[in-house]
Amino acid sequence: MKHIVVGPAAAVVLFIFGAVLAGCGDGTPEQAMARAVAFAGQGRWDKASQIAERTARRCPDLVAAQVLRAVTAERCGDRNGALDAARRAVELDPESFEARYTLGRLYAADTVRAGEAEQVLIKAWKMRRDDVRVKILLCNVAMAMNSPRAIGYLSMISRLPELKDSAELKNQFAVSYVRKGDLVSAQRYFTAAFRAGRSDPEIILNVARFYDGCLRNGKVAARLYREYLRTAGTDDSGKVEAAARLSRLEGAK
Image 1 (tube, one colour):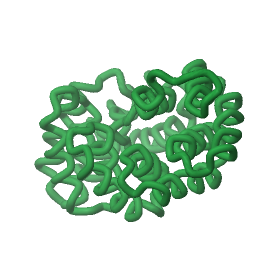
Image 2 (cartoon, rainbow, N blue to C red):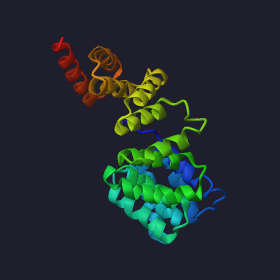
Image 3 (cartoon, rainbow, N blue to C red):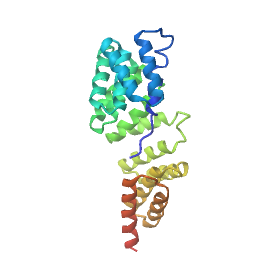
Image 4 (cartoon, rainbow, N blue to C red):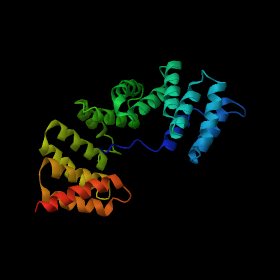
């Protein structure tokens, strides 16, 4: 299932620490973290993570250091280290939006922990009700849980000017309506998603699956599978699925 995208990791780092690190002096923990953020912005996550680890050891009670350690550890593939640091940050300051947002985002990346993610993110949302990222993550975890709250979250973010016309949002509405069994509404939103996302292979494949599996319209599904295969690029798993489904439809003629 296609999620609405929160943003690249480097942007997340800069978003969290942009204000925190303003006006830092030389030799301070803040200065060290500023260097780590600079490395992250260059994609040099190994260097950023090394600095974050040293700073967190030097200042174990500094919330910002633990949050930075969590983000950089995640990017270096150390998920356990990232979760440990994010939990520590929340323990240090339960009222820190940055700490709760980071922990919620990490939980949201694991569908098994979607319930925990929602609990953490709701608290973060109450701290900053206008934060787009939190609203999007809440929507994604509700979708992962097949929760009836998903439609409510979708309606909430559909009022955001930057998202209301996005193909991803329309796709999410469509999937939610499929899960509710409302295929008429699902078809309406899948059609809108397709029109808005004609260049997005994943949305094309989602619409093809809908016409294939839900509406049993093999003719439209086959056309969409062919279009997906023309645009899929390096998505090998999707191409294998689409080719197999297309072969089945063509063989049924």
